[in-house]
Every structure is written in C-alpha cells, then in structure tokens.
Length: 422
Image (cartoon, rainbow, N blue to C red; front, top):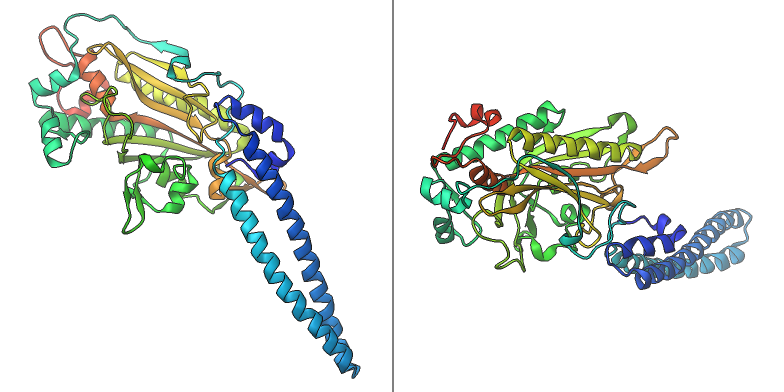
C-alpha cells in the first residue's frame, strides 16, 4: 500500500507513475486527499475536546475542595456534553478512516522508473539471453514424452479432481522430488533459511501481501473457515514478519520454502493450457528477502543471479524480461520474468518472477525496523520463484530429448534423481 504521507506530499507523482501501469489514479487520489483533510480536521477537533476534558477534570476536583459545588456541577455537565460529542467525533473519524483506507488499498504499487510503458506481455523488454535455441526434429512436446514414458497422467488427474491437477508417476514423481530438493539445497547454500509453512492462510495474511482484494477471484477459498489456499509460499513466508518491529542488524532476512501452490487461473481457459503449461496445483520453491530500503535493488540483482544460476545448472536456454507497466503485478515496483525456451513447443514458458515490492507490502503488514535514528521505518520486501516446477519439467523433457528417444538428465540433477536418462 502506498503510504499516506507520500501520497499527501506527492499526489501528482503518484498519479503520473501509476499511469505507467495503465491505472488512472486521479479521482482516487483526489478522494483520498479530501477524506484525509476531513479526517485530520476531525482529529484536531477530537484532540481539542480531550484537552478541554482534562482541564475540566482538574478544575472540578479543585472546586470541590474549595467548596464551590455549584460551579463544579456546572463543569461536570460540560464534561458530560464533551464526552458525548467526543463519541460522535470518534465514530465520524472511524468512518472517514475506513473510507480512506478502502480507496487507498485499491491503488497499485508505484512502478520503478525503469519499468517500460506498455499494454501487455508483448511490450516487455528482453534484457538477457543464455543458451542454445536451435530446434531439431527430436524435440517434441512434453505431453507426448509424459505419455510415452508414463511420467504424468493428466487424465487420471481429471478423474480425481479436474483439469489442471496432474498425477505424477514413477520417474515423473521422482523428478519432481529431485527438483524440489535441488532447488532447496541451492537456496540454503546461498544463505536462505528454509521454512515450512501452512498451505492455507487467513484473510489478514492474504491482505498483507496484496492478494486481497486484488486477486480474490484467483484464489481458492474455504468459506466455512474463511481460509485461502496459497497461490505461492510468498504469502505465508512474508507474513511471518507481519506486525513485527525489526532491528536494522536483523537485515538481510532470507527465507526459502517449498510449497504446493493453488491458483484458479480464472479467464485462462484455452490459453496455453495443454500439458504442464498452466495448472491449478503445482509445486514451487520460493525465495523471500526482507531488507533495508537502501539495499533492495542490489538484493534484486542478487536474486536474479541466483535464479539464472539454477537454469544454467539445468542447462535450459532462457531469457530475462523486464515487465512493462501493463504486465507487472498490482503489488510490484519492478519485476523480471525468467522464461525458458521449450523446444518441443517452440515457445517461451515463464518459470520465475523476481520482484521488488519496495515498502508496499511492508506498509500493509506493518513490517518495520528501527533505524539508526531510533525511529520505526518500513522495510523492503522481495521474492522470487526459484523455481516453479511444471514448466521447468516441460522444458527439461523437451529440450533434453535426444534423437534416440531418451531424455537426458542434467549433470547437476543426477545425484538427486538417481538416474541419468529417462
């Protein structure tokens, strides 16, 4: 959430920067400033009221001591009137604050100055490429490989649950487990503390990281308990620090977590959904950092390098794209997507997003630290997929498919799979 102080001091900058996200904030900003002015006026009136009550309370006691009961009674009546008025002002103040916050939470995060202007993924900026992109006839779509080698049973998943819930079998299941362990070990080696978190979160957690209210329709919800199935481990991991006041010496905080992820993917029917390309349930290892604001963009580069190193060890050709304003998420200030080239489909598949949210999430979850001046400040939060498994598996099966019909397992992964070929 954009801080009210920043919006109050730089309203036009907020409007201009959100235009990059194709969001017209002019009316919302004007309403927020108007409600803020009303709220501050009410607060001043309430403070004056409390101050007068305090003065009267002292005077009443003194008047009774002096035997001036009639004058004391008169002040008691004034005090009662003030208390009634204060309650009314408090109710008005509460209404104004709710109305203000109701608009404020609907404003997206302001994009970083480097975010390109654009409407869709077609306008994203390719900033880096690595690997060999040539295609030959031995590269076939992964769903054919899955069927031939009994690695993934899509139809059984439909029987058990529905589309987008595959069943991994035999070496397909072992490959999943191998990738999860490989990704976790690599993260731990890079200094991340592994945590295991719940797969369901409450409303406060979903709100704090920005999934609510923005992505409510994309999340699976259990109404009886009012829990949400997590779309990514980012949600519970970051919320570990909700309502926490850190010390500056605590930075950087680095966590990694494996979780299943659940996404309704509403509106994506028929859109690149074949095979493992788009699922409702999938496995992912997430990396999260909470850092000092002065270092968050340096940390973003560090996290990008970590993800790039994973893809290089898996010997998968990939590119990094800087997301444009029309494709970047509601909560992010700057995001880089990593896309692998799936040679069987001859298409790019996103396998990771690495993002800096600056203070946007921290403001929503009241995640602060005490700086050198002793005053609480908002921390910066970052996260990245390291990595999401389905499309990585798709690319491995397609890109490492050999002319003799086998799938070559990358050297870095062989100790985890226990086999060299499929």
